[in-house]
Amino acid sequence: MNIKEHTKESNIKRIIVGRIPKDVDLITGVKEVCNAYGIKYGYIASMIGSLKTGRFIYAIPSEGAKLGFKYSEPINLEGPLEILGSQGTIGLDDATGELSVHLHMQVSDKYMRVFGGHIIEGGNDIAATAEIVIHEIDHVELHRVYDEETGFNIFKIK
Image (cartoon, rainbow, N blue to C red):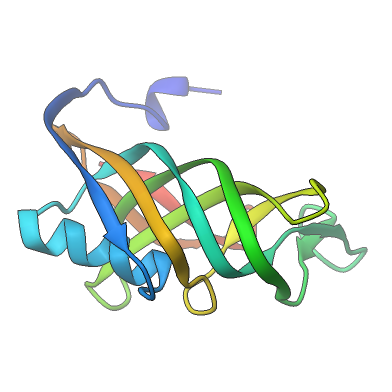
């Protein structure tokens, strides 16, 4: 494997610190922050807070899939949910030219059970707040495209 085919050196250009207010969908809120500051490429370094509801998908075995797994149907969790941690990547979807947020998160419910997975847009409404730190990156472009090898839409580094 030629690792430099899949990686590129970058710098942190700016750091945006703030919060997404109550009743806003989490992914929509991340996109609004990015649009307000003109961020196209970056990552979510930290996010904590609370959700009224959570909507995840996660990897499950699938014999017919290229890698032997696929993503589940969406799982809807009733809140309140505590956001224990979250990380993600921000780039552009080559098919639409729009921002694309790849976000993973761990939450706990009222029984202190912990759930985690891949957050999807819609169904992740903020309960009180989501405090967020976004690092905009420089000299790297992240483009979400369909990858023949994996069968998934993934970020390619340019």
